[in-house]
Length: 629
Image (cartoon, rainbow, N blue to C red):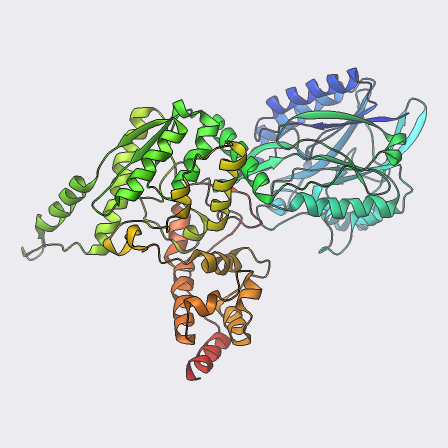
């Protein structure tokens, strides 16, 4: 009876030595458990998101060398693993050495040749070039190879025949995207389906995205059911990035039987190895569908991502500026769970505009967490900065004339934000021996509701891919489930969101941020996360049809509540669109790395150009029509 092991391993990007050691350890574990086959993830040797490290020939040679170590370790066991494959005699379209994203199979210290491939490995067919993926920049696809050889991918893509203990098994080998073919010109899975296979293997390096696992179970379950054979999906865990955006890899490796049922799922964010007897899978009971709320998955992604990010940069202590607001409170509760309260310093930095209410809530939060706490008032230093700017003469060296700057109330607000971050938090972090956080949420990041070199600063923006409503949901989840007690004070959850930078944002008078989160969260989400991104033209079409809330997914009645007239609605729409496509882009470019959880995170996932706001001809027509009514 064939026994197949799924090895869910942490892949450390750019460290083939570390990854190979992990693979060799898992091979020994699989052998000890009586497995005939052990499967590792896509790009298990080098990692996946490496930027232009792929252009280093020395690194490529190292990956080949470590690959040979794995092949040599395949005595009496079949090892399936992902690695970069190099044809040193050929070039990619960029003139650099030819690289393939490859699926290797080794048995008894030799590679097993796929039936029709010109190389002793399977080459990835479908190259994702959207969102965070950039495969075509570095890798040569099977489609391109087929054209080069004057043939078709269907003739090259072929099963691998395995000879194990006197039996022959035919395996269909796929690499990640090859199983997600809906929007491609052909489907590798369907091409292999004609080959009378015994099982499929999909090795993946698939980042976590909210809701992706449910969709994958539908897609891969259907594939296994229609083919009538089991499918093994093996994904990695770990943290990888492409510079500006940081992704968690959750694993969730899954075995589907020939009925399409999920019969085994490996845990999120944990290394694990499981062995399944191929012949018994059809009779295995289907695992129950998870009833966990989305926020539970988001919490695990954030906790794991923060922990691994800190480990990667060797940071053990954290400083957070807390205001008595929800974002900094949730950040504090998150980091306290990761580093421990003894390694967390919370700093409250009140000015004359901060109420006794928020100062008291900050103290209550710190007490609940049992962490380090400081109160450093900033009004004196802010006043000193304003006085220096206004009283120091500005000399025109060409004419000898003098002038004095005038600090407006708006500039004074920014001075407060910069004094808190650039002076207090940066100094406190250095003295404490750690780093300070950026606590921005996704709504603020969308429209640049932050201050450059102020509250937008920090080493990581862990909440910047969460809308405000998700931040509130996370506060409830941590109180109810993670801590099992009220850590984020209910008063912080209940209070109106406010930056408290002026008397116009007095929370005790119910005054807060200009962003109306119950509506704007969903409007901004339509700009970013819709696959066909919304523009002001789309929003005005919905307004004209009376379907804004339906299309955005927000609560009914909010448009009339916030915008009694078409002029009000259009003014608000243009205000935020101008910021989203204007100054906010410059701010996002300078923002800290963002930890991704959504289907579209800022950074490399959402590629932007600083071109300014644009309104289509149809938008201008709709605007004129609505304002004339």
